[in-house]
Length: 194
Image (cartoon, rainbow, N blue to C red; front, side, top):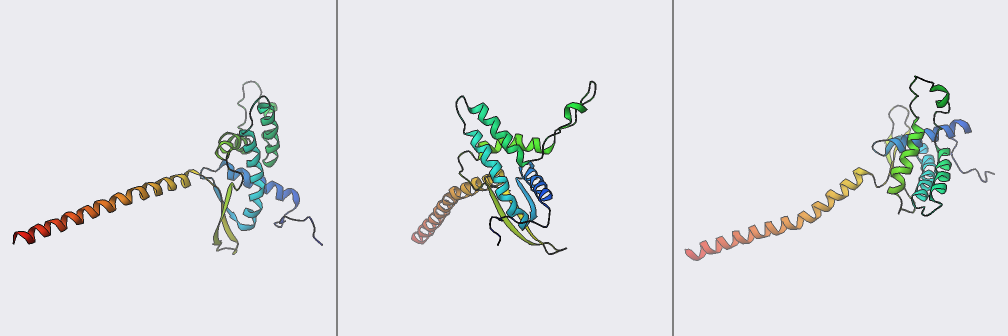
């Protein structure tokens, strides 16, 4: 029986699988387009993994009052478990006269998660990601998928342009109707003059 064995193993050991999901989550959060391309089983495993981290940032964005700072720090530390840690040897490596090494992508992901994405999804109760199937890869036949964050800049821009087209199309129809009416009037006037 396989009770309480809910997730895919993806052909990896536990440590490798968790590390891979952390890398995928970091890539998704840090990507400029708010989307990454991966295989379908990996995308399906990544979805609940990254949505739990986004829920923590959403909770932190909605905190108010005296407990906001302490509660926000606690939620930030909980979300850090979904990404690889920062440079833990950063202090030892930065000696006098040396420039410290840059922060890792995990730290940048947490910063973006709690800065931008927490506010973006503040009023959304769930469903922060979308999986789009792409078909099979030519080399090994693996099924590819795009996993993306919803309400991204491209999507908002497309909705705005669709609204503009919807508003502009009735005006164009009325202008075309006016042109037809004026053409019909001119024909009537020409017919009456003869």
